[in-house]
Structures are given as structure tokens and as C-alpha cells.
Length: 414
Image (cartoon, rainbow, N blue to C red; front, top):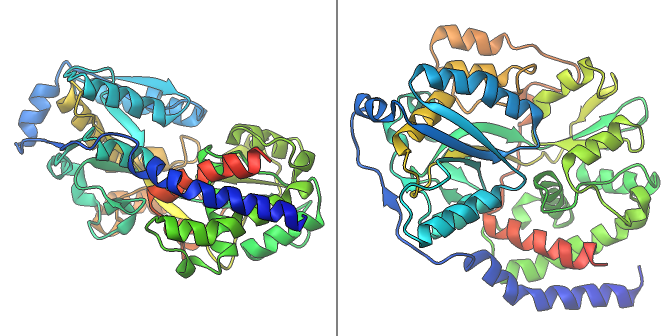
């Protein structure tokens, strides 16, 4: 890349900084949260009976959709709650609906429960969009380790009883060992591999959540490691670290699939490129689903998870109840059910959804410790304990918004 192009990118990056602070700190008017009144769980169950709970969640995950429709919803019906899944393309759509209802003082809104984390939770939290103080009432919280930072904070923000954990995620780079003879051992080595094998790698365009985490993973690598990136966003840190990140991503573009002229718009498109043999890598936040994709023939039998010495980013996703919901008791019942050992186990089965549990094995009844321990292992993906060993923390939500916007302006726009 020419020095002129480097300078142009850096100038644009510097000009963005003030605007990025506005994006990350002023996206919604601040408002006091609504706090739930503490009460006995039997009273919550009694109020929830007959209520309909509309769960707004990303609709592009077929297994996730099937789990909610075929496993979670029937279990909720046994408790007298009708669970309706509302598929959306972007979790931000649900947050925007709740914010609009909040501003209009709606008390029986269209959204009763939202699957979310990160910047979407932070945006709603700032505007007082979520019901808070309710998770301590959930009986299933007894199986959660309160000192586990993945479930007590959400991208650096204290969950403060405003959302219940649903499952853990671990970012994984995935490759075909039949085509990648000498797999890279670190993210820096992966970047070098990309340049040495033009056309065989790409990543989804942010703000796709998987493409977004790949960019954050590269940020850690080019900055010298996790310890060199402050987890709390600031204009000063962005101005110092983002230029090198975007310069490195721009240097990679000629070696990407289609020379970086276009990017997959979502993870499903990248998965298809990988399945068709057009690229040698894909990536995922849910590697436990990989064995099933191999077994059904979607991915090649030689698919493997790349273990990198610098670790990968781990986080958790949650269920939040909007302050505008008219079925808050029903939403709490569904969130507790989703957190129960039985539902967490069913969701962890690779053939059902393959999501990592948020429950602490040491807190589980013996029966469930055995059931979780008996989940099938695969040569495709290592156990979660190995995969998450030395996991990198998430930066706070301000970084996510800023990096996504910076990528759009400095990489997508050329």
C-alpha cells in the first residue's frame, strides 16, 4: 500500500474519533431503569399463567430457531406460558422498537424478551429500556457462579440484574486440514498465511457479529496482545490503536477472496464459501455445532478448529426483559426455564443447538453433572475447557460500535 493511502486512512481515522464518542455514548437518551418488585417465585408463576411472551431473536440460525420452537416453547406451555419466537435480522431492531415504546410510555409493548449482548444491551441500559433487579428471583440462578465474569458482566458492563445468562460463546477459527497443510499457530501467523495463500480467506463484513469479533481479534494481535488494549473505550485509545488495525486489514485485502472487492454479508455466506471449497477457513462463535455440520455432510470431514497460542475471545449472551413488556412475569418464567439444567443440557446437545452452558458444573445436581460430562466429544472441536483456556476478554461495547463504524468507513468504503 502506498504511503499516500496510509496517510489518507489515518487522516480519516483521526477525523472519526470525536464522532465515535458520540456514537458510543449518546445513542439513546439516558433514563432511570425500572426495577422489579421482589416477590415469591410462586407469585410470579401464578401471574405468568396465560400470558404470551414474544421472544425477539436473530432468525438466521436454523438450529436456534428449531430449539426455541420445538424444545423451549413446549416446555413453557407446560408452565402455562405461550412462547412466540419473533425472528429478526438484527438485534438492534428489537432494541429500537423497545426504545420507541419506552419514549411513548407504552406499557404493553410488542417485545417481551430479547436475546442480546454487547452494544445492544448497553444501548438499552443507557436508556432505561430493560427491567432490572429480577434475575435474583429466578430459581435456576442457583446453578450460576456469581463470580464468573462472563455472566456477571456483558462486554465490560455490569449486568446488574437486568438480563439472565443464556449461553456462553467462544470465538473459533475453523479450517480444512486437507487444504491447510501447515496451519498457523497464532492470529499474527494467520494474517501471514492469508497473504501467502491469496484468495483462500475472507471474513463477514461488520457489523455481522462474527466478522466484528474477527476484527477485534486482529486488533489484539496487531496491538501486541490483550494487555495493550484498554478494555474501556476512549477516543485516545481508539486514535492510538485503530489506525494500525485498519492499515493491516487494508494490506490484507488484495489477498482475500475476490481480492477484497466484496465480503460475505453474514456468517452463512462465509460458511457456504467454505463448504463449497472456495475458501479454506470459516469462523464461528458456536464451535460446538461443527461436529453436526460435518456429520450431515455440510462441512468436509477434515474440518478442524484452529487452536492459537494467543487465545480467542469469549463472551456470553443473555435474555433481557423490556421495561415496556406487558408480560414481564411470563418473560421471567421463560428466562428461568431457559436457564434450567434440563434446558441448558438440551441446548448443549450438538444435534439440538450445540451451545455452551452458563451453568457451573460444581453447582449442578449429580445427575446433570453426569449428563453434561457425557456429551459427545469430537476430533473436529476440542472440549470447551481446552478451547476457552486463556480466553481473551471482550472490550466494552463502545469499542464494538466504534470499530464496526471505522471498518465501514475505512475498509468497506476503500
